[in-house]
Amino acid sequence: STPRTPLMAGNWKMNLDHLQATHHVQKLAWTLKDGKHDYSAVEVVVVPPFTDLRSVQTLVDADKLQVKYAAQDVSAHTDGAYTGEISPVMLAKLGVSYAVIGHSERRQYHGETDELVAAKAKSAFGQGIVPIICVGEGLDVRKAGDQVSYTLAQVDGAFDGLPAEQAAQAVVAYEPVWAIGTGEVATPEDAQEVCGAIRARLAELYDAELADGVRVLYGGSVKSGNVASIMAQPDVDGALVGGASLDPEEFAKIARYQ
Ligand code: PEP
Image (cartoon, rainbow, N blue to C red; front, side, top):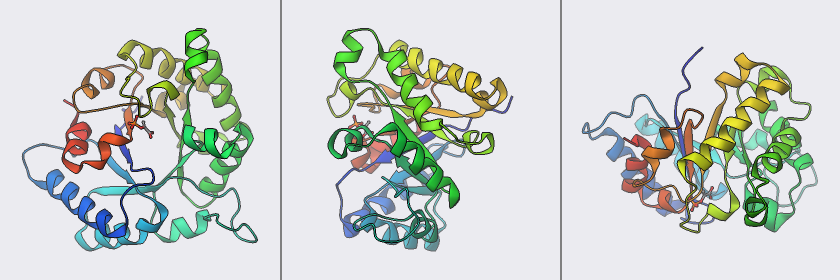
């Protein structure tokens, strides 16, 4: 089986305007290039607000930076009367590699359903953008011990109708809602339990070889001090980092994770 390239994605959420973004990406790039550490085996991705993407693209292109960039969301439609939405066609033109889909904040505050998440995943793939599909349970579900079945139902929903060629490229981020922005990180065992179950479900939905190649990330209060033990888990292939990604040096530390 092919080894899975670790993916470290920094979700800025609704922070950093385009000028701050320029500053941030330059700092991050310098840190990645300072020669003190080797980042060649890791994919480093920043996930800025839409309004920053053009500036980030200019910077990445001009300096041939080894940073990729992603959108925080994408429309399920390609064009038309959808005020406020951003088309995957527009994102593809900006050189966006990934789109975060179904983040818990979008599910919570914008009512996104599994059906919409599936539609957005297809919409992204349609333009060559790889979705980072977010799943994960809230505190009530965790307390009831239902985290695996709850999260797998979201996986089923997101992959519904997705052909194997696309599913093989998709990235899944397991983000327990109770661990997002709370400082309460899941234990490595908690992360492994659900990330392993996600991979096993993909093997059922498709096949074992496909599941073996899909990257499953963990997200929820990841910091440089806790990332190593999480990354040591066999089914964790990277991290989706929120708060800690706003500091480029801390994010670089997370990205090298040893
Ligand atoms: C996130 O927004 O995906 C996230 C994991 O946030 P934080 O790292 O701040 O918990």
